[in-house]
Each structure stands twice: as C-alpha cells, then as structure tokens.
Image (cartoon, rainbow, N blue to C red; front, top):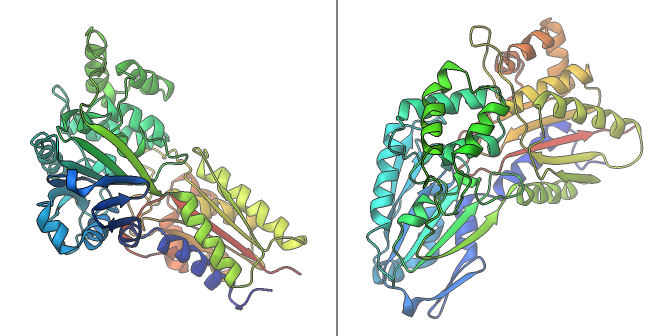
Length: 451
C-alpha cells in the first residue's frame, strides 16, 4: 500500500522528484571535475596544461543553471587562469548570478519562438568562437529550447518568415524532428554552423537532452553537429505536412527552392576543430528518478520511456487512462511513470482556446476515465511550461472529476478547441511551477488505489 493517503499528493511528489533529478546546476557541478591538471566533463577529458582560454557559448531553458554549475565546478582560480568568458542565450526569468559567463536574455518568458534579442546573442556567439585559437577550448552548453533561443537567420531569410514557419509547423502537429529539419536549413548557427565557425582546437558540447532518443542533430537543431541533408529534406517535410502551398510558408519555400538550385547548397565543409558531445541527462534520467521516489513512497511501480515522438496527445492520454483502469482493477503495479513528448494539431485560430500538450493529454484521459475513482493522473513538462501558458501541465483525481461534473463542463468541446487551460483552471487542476531551469520533455504519473 502507498505510504501516504492522498493519491494526488503522491503523484505530484513523484513528478517533482523526476524534475529535481535533472536540475541543470546540480548536474553540471556533479559531472564537471578538476583533478590535478585534468578537466573532465562527463566522459570528455582534457589536460588543462594544453588549454589556453576557455570560452562558453550555447543556450536553452537550462542554460543559466548549466553556467552556474560549470563555474562552481571550475572554481575562481581556474576561471581566472583560463580567462573564462562567453555568452549564453536564456529565457527571461531564468537569469542567475554568474562570475564570467554572460547570460543574455534571448526571448521573453513564455514566448518560445525566435526573437531579435536571440539573434543578437547568437551572432555574438558566432563572433566569439571565430576569434579562438588552436590551444583554446570552447564549451557549448545546450538544452531544450535551444532552437528558438539560437536564431541566426541565413542570408535571404527574414526573422519574420522564420517565426511564421515555426508557428505554422507547430500548429500542424509537426514533431520536433520535422520542426528542426526545417530550422536547420534556415540558419547560420544550426546544422553544424556553430562548429564550422569555431576556430578553437577543441569544441565540447554538453547537453541536457529534450529530444526522445537523443539525436544530436535535432537537439537545439544541432549547432555543433554536421548535417548534410540540404534543402530538399526541408521541402519534403513541408510537403508531408501539407504546407507546401500555405501562404505563410511561401517565402520559406521560395528560399529553399532557390538553395536547392545551387550546386553548392550542401554544407559539406566540416568543422576544423576537434568536436565532442556529452549528454548529461535526458527524459530517462527524470523517469528513473521519479521511479525511485515512487518506490520510497511504497508504490509498486512500472516505468516506460518513449524513444521517439508518440503521436497525438489525445491518444496518449486515453491510453494512460485505460492503463490506469487496468491497474486499479487488477493485481500488479499501482504506479505507472512514463516519459515522452506527444504532438497536438491545433484548432483553427478563430476557435482555438489556450492550453498545451500536457493539459490536452490529461483532459483526454479525464474524458476516458469519467469519475477517476481511486485514480490520480498527471502530465507535466519538465521545463515548467506547457504551450503558451503559465502551467507545466495538469492533474486529475476524484475531486477534479467531481468538480467538472458539478460545473457541467463539456470535455469534448474543450478538447476540440484546445482549451484545456480554461477547463482546468477553475477546477484547481493545473500544475504551476514556474520555469524549472531544465527541460527533458514530459513526465506522466499514474497512481491508483487497488481494491
């Protein structure tokens, strides 16, 4: 039996344990070690005697914490000796005090799209890495949200067109792989652009991954990963999503076709520096830590971590609801923890409400469960942000289900309009954490009381 009486409280404690395990500052401080004259970051190792300067670049929702953790691990003596410097693009509201690394606000809070201030920071990074020498070490810190925070539009691409195509892809239910396939072709920094600009002897990219399966070219659109897909891959992606003839896509389609016609369109010139990649944490890290907390609370838990995009959030929510009913009514695990990242196809703009993929998932689960008898189910983004809202996700239990019935809320209508936020807000069903300073996709928790 569970160690505590409230299923909802337990589900929240389990979810928070998963998020806490991937807090960026703790990860970098733990995984960065200085032993004598040797620097280790994860499985990367270098002699400090061979390193001149250390310059740090990158960005993401976890970048501020990563910078603090790195500076703490290096210590003031090494920071001074190696003239540590650099710039990271971070979201508004996540800036923390640093000694040598400048944290540049690359976008407002809750606006997960390219912005002019992000372009300013990205261009500065390209200048910084191109000024390094063969004895210098460049450390690139990347985390979820890095694609939007590191915009550097290629010649012939306007920031407005980049924003428009990003919104269009997201509204069409594009997976992160599809979204970043297009982004890579529109940028001077993505798709290996940062590595090609880097003149340091060594470039090590340290990653907190928000992409299932950890494909390096997709995380933050792969600024240090050489990618020779070319514009044809991006055009194919737009065609597969039915967007080739959409008016908002017209400037980007024209640009890609123009690039396609150039004989030298492939980015074949690889980086001159020695490039390494270190993944410090991912979705599985959070799911494992959540499982440890469930065990500590007395649950018999099962864990599943997706390795690729899961498809519609509504389907995932209904499936979790069905598994919850089975767990409640049969012997076996009484807690299920899953990780992943589903997609949402948005309703037309004139009908659309407010929500995010996690809230949509939980609302679909509620529609399947009904009264939620002896069941609590939640889904939350580990970054504390779910769509364009101030919620990380949503949680349901018997109390939320009863309140929804009392208010006579039509779940089908709210689902169809992507208005889960408005559904859950008056029911005390939203999870609000504020920005967590990390991002490893989503974690879902189901706990049941068995008869």
